[in-house]
Length: 82
Image 1 (cartoon, one colour):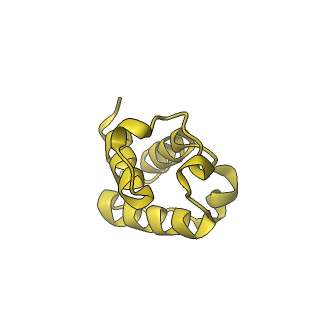
Image 2 (spheres, helix red, strand yellow):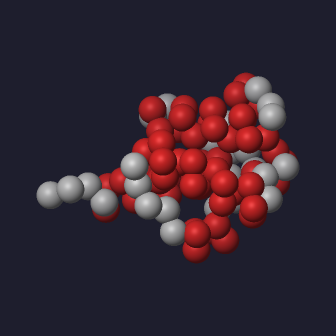
């Protein structure tokens, strides 16, 4: 598991007030009680933590923890300085 994935799981577990053991890449956000408002908070915190910009438009395309990890890693690849 990547460093990003671990950081994202820890952040989501904190926001969902559950153990990191309860969060896997396949865990659906709705199962953790993460609605669109909480998802925005999580994405905002990830922006600060990872130094990237995450467009709010991706919220409609994320259903699982793995979706967030994938999107963040894609954004990091496309936003790398030359």
